[in-house]
Image (cartoon, rainbow, N blue to C red; front, side, top):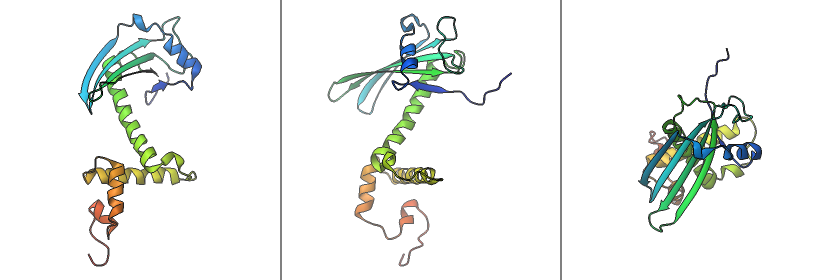
Length: 190
């Protein structure tokens, strides 16, 4: 018997056209395993519909290792200032069973993943991480660690916007860089 250490939940995107089309073509209207969530915050109102479908049933099997469930998440967002409504549908696949991954659990997992994507967005837009020329050895991992340190330090110092925090810190170069980290002064004159 094969033992797996971890499960996966993968978003199926357009860069996997056959799998993407196969997941989109599943009988989503017949699904009874559903969850609806409504939230209000960050200047918007959001409604999410989460559906899960077991695809190991004869006739629905998709060609992907260990695949058991397909997921469809439909999000409606309303900007509370402008009233603009946007819709987004995300399809995903997982090796978890329906017992392990209810629509509620999938919703929690997906929300936590979107939080990770927000960090990557900040690292790319504020620090231009994707444009970095550092590609050898442990350089990329080390730079990612330093960027995370900078973001967390600025958040701890009360900055809600990392870009604004970086600008503010650059306007007044401090005498001892470790002051921002709360470490004892090591610079002369302090």
